[in-house]
Amino acid sequence: MDVRPEFLALVLACALVTALPRVLPLILLSRATLPPWLLDWLGYVPVAVLAALTAIEVLVPGGKGLQLAGNPALPAILAAFVAAATTRSLLLSVLCGVAAYWLLL
Amino acid sequence: MKGFRGGVRAALPVVLGYLGIGLAAGVVERAAGLSHAEILLLSTVLYAGSAQFVLAGLLALGAAPAAIVSTVFLVNLRHLLLSAALAPALRGLPAWKNALIGLQLTDETFVVAAGRRPLSAAWMAGLNLSAWAAWAAANVAGAALSGLAADTRALGFALPSMFAALLVLQLRLQRRLRPALAVAAVAAALGVGAQLALAGPWAVVLATVLGATVGLALQRWTSAPSS
Image (cartoon, helix red, strand yellow):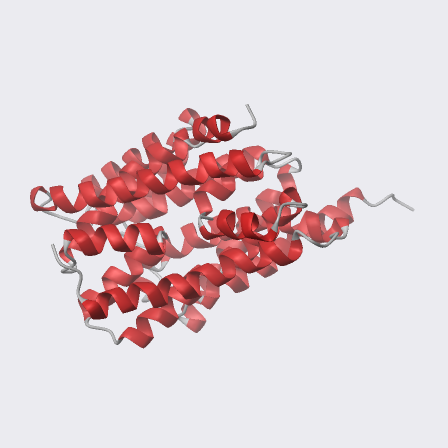
């Protein structure tokens, strides 16, 4: 049940570099009036981030090479998509995705 | 319901999702050799799902601390864009309140907050603290239950499943669906292409910037008056 000092240092360093991009834009940009085109652009950011993250996790597992044929993540992510579209529940979607992936492994 | 309690209520889908993913994260972190106390520290102080999966994976590989910190930085760099996107809704708040709100910014809470206007600091606090507490509790529970999970590979798939579900929920919130679908397709293709070419977390940032730009261009183009 101990925390190794070097692990504490690692977590603090990781937390610092994580906090900067989380905090700085909120502080700086909430003081400024943003032009409408920038607001529209920012409105597309979440869709783009999530699509990129999902596609990379599924198609380039472990960051090493494209995997298409026989990739169990492809039908499994489809199950998660269908569950999300029909139930709108994050938990049910995650359960469907993991269960499908586990069955296909 | 715009106050703290409203935020807690709005956090419910994220809390349920975090219970699943946090459980998986706890199992993966335990498998990487972290103690229960270290997992509690990690999930409360770093509080970043994908970064924690990455950190556990790199620790298990015996990576150098500097490499782990740089990778976590790059993985979490996308928050720059989320934080910027949330800023207009939180105008007029004192800087320290925005700093506290930003510290607990995640992909999931962002998606919940992005569909709401106006936002209040109390509502954000209710949302953020609920999600944060659920995440830490689930990580610790996952660590405690880790002996029961024979195969942790399937649990790692909780993360992409959550991203996929959030993408669907986010698309439902979009006022203009067609450019948004184009953004998703472009960002997905660019992300995979950039990941293969660069093999680094810059791929997500690059795909996001270009994908959102394509969306804006399409929106301008299709809504421009025909001459």
